[in-house]
Image (cartoon, one colour):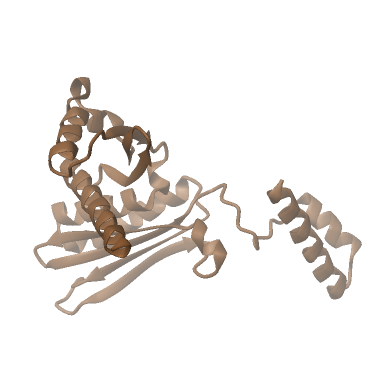
Length: 229
């Protein structure tokens, strides 16, 4: 019985997230987080356009609150807005933006829209990014195109710091899938080596390959210890 209740709760949460995203439109909402507090349910909507979500005098928030009470049977829902200050580092917003471009101008614009999105991410200072566009592009056979730059972890614990998202574009040629992965600046990756002045000074002191390897290990250990503080 407990397992069934758990599944029902997760199913309701999924339906709420999908409803909120559909209500405000594709490309407006990145994530919807649901938290349970002693006074009721807290719905946190992450967006780069808070004014659009709130509406004039909070009418859209009030409308959403009424729907959550009636349709999803929430006792005391409270909607909070979390503003995204750097949308170019949010994988979901980037994926939705590409999907909207393909739906508006056609699937043949996949290259220009992908390169434009990748350039915006790169120019903003991201460490790395990868875009994958899959569908009948540009022929009748389904293909997958990859656009990438920089450094991106794909396996291990370090891969959890990469922001990943997926979106779908419904075009005349068919359905196109968009996968986006972004490694934002400032993210600490444990096995990343930064070549700075301190590192070069240590290397100059140790001329042999074995000593250089030992220096690298020391610098890694030192930075790992600093990261834990």
